[in-house]
Image (cartoon, rainbow, N blue to C red; front, side):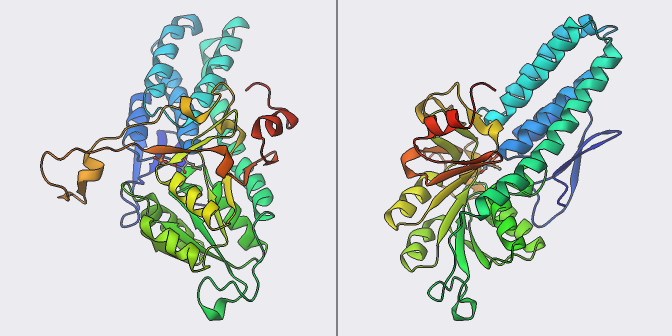
Length: 363
Ligand code: MRU
């Protein structure tokens, strides 16, 4: 399993995703401030991985406190949560994980727990979130694989010799690297491949941070899943040429009506898929659904530093002084989404009703 993040006796060990695929190196975060830094700098990224990282950040903060009692630790606990909450605004899994920790801490305080019990329980909770995330990805994978269209003699994504193979396009990286393992969108693909289905993945390169070209390609190659990287502007012509039979992407936040925020460029792909009659699936854990946000319009979109657009590999690409925008996410309206795959099952439009039917009333 790809070691996206791991708890060690010294702290949290992160596979440095800014250096992949050329270098496999690790960053050890020994304080909650360092966990916040690795989230901001995208050493670790992807909504579920960000949530679990923040949970471990809280655990580190608790373990390193100089407070003498649980009550004395309370203001510091709030400060730790606030620092971690201020890292990236779009992925709701971050806030979901911190809320879960806040509820746990409140319960422990109310029950008169000692500081050492608080430390132990907070770390246990982070471990539980880690394990649950992997299990959720596997369940999602099984539900999602069943939705993928069957290949026939007309589908030959990788050329004539691969008749029966379906081409599946994905955007960004919603894989093992974006989770604690297995992945959401890539979990759907992994599950289908494990069932013997023939899949050829087309990975959008995903400008400007290149999660598709660097990360999706790296992790799928490690699993020997046939993968072709395409530039973001190539998807339309491949769809028109009949090489893509389905799109599967992840999500950073799903509003109560099904509108979905994901990596910038996802909306483009959704429009193209609709135009070409190709199913467009979103795979995300329950922790990505944000009932408190009514529609996509209310989802906060992170604006990242201009240097990610102006430079690549330390080399300047754009003229000095030109205007730059770098919104990291966009929102795909629910009407473009064929189905949302969660670990509890598959949601279909109208998503508000589908969510209620599946019992989502409060987080
Ligand atoms: O900016 P990133 O790399 O954190 O964005 C990641 C994505 O947009 C993913 O598609 C999303 O978080 C789902 S990950 C399972």
